[in-house]
Image (cartoon, rainbow, N blue to C red; front, side, top):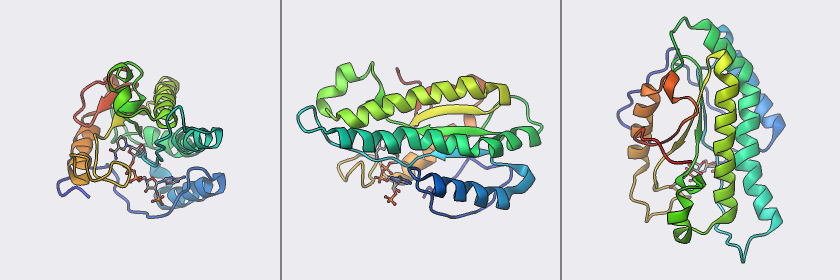
Length: 210
Ligand SMILES: NC(=O)c1ccc[n+]([C@@H]2O[C@H](COP(=O)([O-])OP(=O)(O)OC[C@H]3O[C@@H](n4cnc5c(N)ncnc54)[C@H](OP(=O)(O)O)[C@@H]3O)[C@@H](O)[C@H]2O)c1
């Protein structure tokens, strides 16, 4: 975890639990646990981070592989967002804060540059991973849909690329330690406002081409 954390939730509360985003019963359990813990304050910030990768190329991809990645990277975040919507709405109503922010009520979808259709003209050959690229492009659309839909409730939704990070997925060739990625994203979370809902940003807050 990051050593320095600039983002400070308005109502900090620690709950730890497993939630399998491909399993409706597991999502529901997580919602109930969060509701029981947070009560009337609601949930200020939902970060859809869970994701899986597939290195399948056009030659190697299968329908099963495509569907598994789509299920986790697109259906999962959307169902989790839907399930936590009542808690996010509660938070948006409970706090008398001007405009939208992560302190009020927000959904952050952790996406990837590989989901950018525009950038794929330049970077496709570096990572010709069809299932993953398609899933993150679809997640980007889900973020845009959510941002438009949830403006009425003052709930912000932004898609963020964490950088190429030294995780199981990113591998050890990745230049970015987890702590650096996390600390820079936390700064971006803290800076997000009304004008950032519906944007695709990198970990430094710069806009990424769709
Ligand atoms: N690493 C990078 O360079 C990079 C770049 C761009 C975007 N991203 C995105 O950043 C996010 C985090 O990736 P990461 O690099 O940390 O990958 P990771 O090291 O492979 O970790 C993925 C995490 O997602 C969890 N997960 C997978 N399927 C799940 C499910 N059905 N329900 C709940 N949790 C599930 C995994 O849990 P288990 O360990 O229990 O399986 C694991 O904690 C992903 O959305 C990824 O696409 C990563």
